[in-house]
Length: 457
Image 1 (cartoon, rainbow, N blue to C red):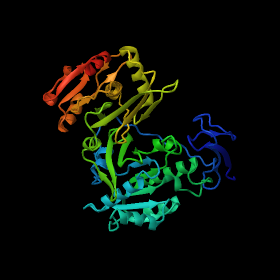
Image 2 (image 1 turned 120 degrees about the vertical axis):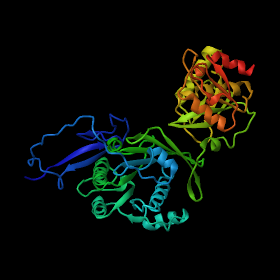
Image 3 (image 1 turned 90 degrees about the horizontal axis):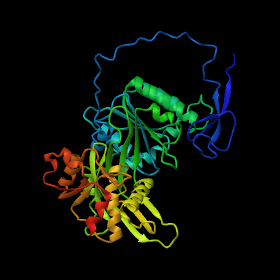
Image 4 (image 1 turned 180 degrees about the vertical axis):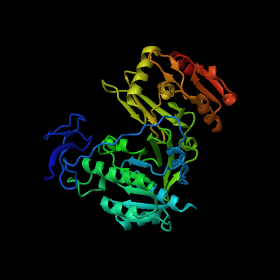
């Protein structure tokens, strides 16, 4: 019986399949992303060759488990994000904007592991760059003498045949969008190719028990290109973030089967490559100037790590009927909510003011605990009165104007005390859980946003 080839029209952004072509994808609302793809044909199983299923054995939840023996990469920030090191047989998907430093980070990772005393074999397979291009980067990073196995290939069958005969410990594929299988009749980077090539590589990683890194391109919205099933197939998803105008890079875990999510690692891009930042709070506040209105320090929490960052606000009269709201590093909808509460509960006339908000250093904050710091920065700029230079602020603002408590206040205050801060503006519920961790910091409690005005009178 001849093997039938099926033609489908698949959205290259979200992976939704359609029986015929259309201009707009109904699932992700993107235009001109639906491409014809052939499914089946040579290399696929005949429908008539079906086998009978086997009975699955079930076991109880209790029983002896196998401890995960992690491999330390010798890069502390990366080990922190991964949850303590690499798990053999795991697959890590790394995404980020073009030119942000993904290849640099993974080349440094590969060289660092290859130089460990245990000498695990590390393979770096590039599908985007020639060997000479990778060697130029390695020479610039002073890694040219590291025992790394380097190759330039895109055919997954060749890669699998090579790795099956190796004793690989870590394999890096840069990138998954350049890989292809001859059996799949579509171009590299298509939904079918990405799904099929990732499946074959992940299956080999589980079989050979090596850690597999897959580099993924990102779309203009910042999500990893290709079908969402790719993120479900892997064990860990890491995003490498940063602004081109800043030297800081943030490695963030958004999925991790072997550790905590929302953990971050901080790096600084220098001439010799990416350098770990052990104390990101000191680095983010290094260029902060005192006695400036509209500036305050927020004690945030990224995963299990406390981070102090400077929040800057600028309020100026608008010359247009609709005031401008510009936000960098924070949620613009959250800013609109905070401004609405300040106007309704405190009587501030913000509807005739342009407001600009910036998180200094290029860090992106998603915590509601930054509400109070943002409100204080806006009021400080509006009144042209600076806040005390040695004060940190955190707290969530509710729609009724109340200041709500936040998670792990002690950890935030410990970080503030370590950097020399002597006072803190916090929610009123803080002292209910008072511990010696912040006895030497003056804590000023605020229960409602109406009391914020008293700081500037």
